[in-house]
Length: 365
Image 1 (tube, rainbow, N blue to C red):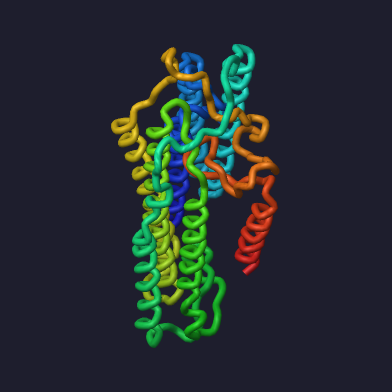
Image 2: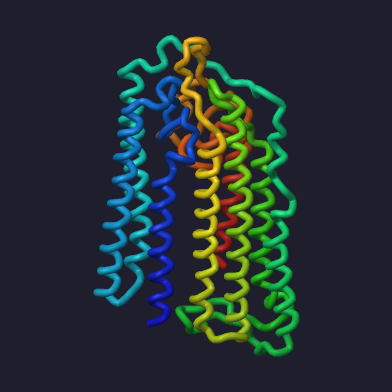
């Protein structure tokens, strides 16, 4: 029964985080790109955008609440947490649908009202010398690295006390798969942690190469806003994978039979807490940005009628970027915080293939 409540809490927390993350998405997105649609500077505060944003957030709250309540009722009636897992998928589909239809409405308004009429569309140049790469600090790797070292130390210290066969898979609290004890098999949790750390370091290195795109007309402050969010993203990822590593350590302790088997289920809790901490860090960053960096609207007569390159045609549904003429492998997302790959770049397909292969291998093990 405890396992049911642990997984129920975990699934409900994930659903709540999905809802909250999508609720704040418009605040995480540059104001010149709302719901995947490029907005001219003098339309940033247009009432139609505010109305669509408000309706989108109401839909997100209602969908999240209804799915969580329905899933919980169904799970209790059936006596299994399976409906909760399917409900996460249902929520993802629902929030994506809300985003998609909101984007269609905004795109229609933009075309119908001729928002881009009279604007010169160009790629902005940095307004000052800003070190875009300075916000990635090497010390962000230290916390997860320390968690990995702690897991390796625990494996070595407890090695003589472990049984001759090591558990590598549980069904609830019941072990279902074993391997012969050896230093290599005991270190399996460490291998997972090292893989996550390597993937994170690789992601950080890619992010350092992603360009910052200032927004007209406030080139400097818009660049600083993006840098602040990027810095928060780096830090929140470091916090998240550190919590995840502690979850892997707990799972390893259960595999080694150093603690009761129930910890194989409880090991998911650090990852959930890590997700909560990640959302908190980013949310606080949004508040800080609103306090420290003001927005210009571009409505003043002395400002030129310039807007960022209107490349809506390269964005499929507002979030899939395909542009063979763009040499960049990654570009800032048009909805939310972070970056997305350019599917018009052959290197992106190579990386996607490697990731899919790695996931497939992990599930086959």
